[in-house]
Length: 398
Image 1 (tube, rainbow, N blue to C red):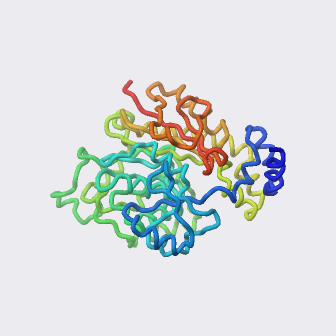
Image 2 (image 1 turned 60 degrees about the vertical axis):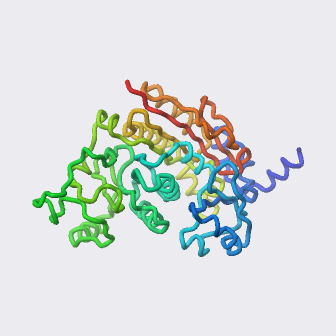
Image 3 (image 1 turned 45 degrees about the vertical axis):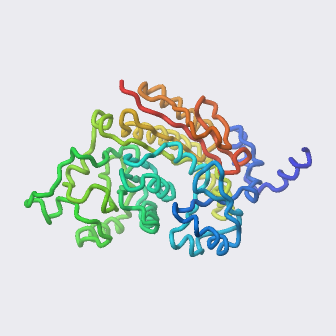
């Protein structure tokens, strides 16, 4: 055992002293960062593509090992890259960590659900959610970074999964647009609203002259990220998203708490921004980005305090948009208690209508319990995945 520990320490990447201190303060073992070469890369196979597995294995030059506890997921060696493969380029497979897939599965999405992904980029989660929805329901993706949300749009179109989706560039802490439902006014039959920009017609990637000019001015001005007072920008909607023919003023109208309780989202995913310390691959990137970048993004005390505040606000707003009886999953790829259990505890203290739910499907998952009952933790040693914290809530009538 002593030899194993010595070997693990010897294989540690050259982590800076400040990061080692961050790990020590949070009770985290730096040895996990020596496990990068032993943790598989995970891919999700688009449903219906199972007969093409032999062809994909031949192209990738490796076996696709089925993940027994997670449908449609396969493990491949960590050194195998999929981005240049035809299987990836043709939309047959995409990369997503098994722990992230488990968080999505925990939501229990069913056909017909209205689903909100409040921190949608870079897009793999959206694709899995869209697959689970099938040909009914709706999916709304929100992200504060327009270029990252544009990448989500590209992924949805690549995998032919965007028909029931709509994507908003918006601040997730204040986003308040509810799913489309039958109570919204339709422009159909209203000739005074037709063809004058007041109703949604079929989405096109071609922008109007007015939009191009607005974008040009914003670029020159160094367009800032959306704030809590910014109006959400709709950058994509599918032909079956329910928007076509509806009045823009109805669809884009902010909601209040009472409306959300009755007509909000059935399922909400809040995979919040965090320090990413549970992602070995992410921390490895700082060797190339420079450890000073790590200081700024992970170790800076002021930024960490801002993150904790942001996480609580994202969770709070996601819950506000959840309908009574719905389910919300909160997750981060941090292993710290401060960004996970502490955020959950603060949230529960302020929201008597919220209650943690047991994740029934997790009985066979390779994870351990968090320090709060019914919460879960994935970590490299226990799970052979990236680190991830998962908590599932439901909303009761108050």
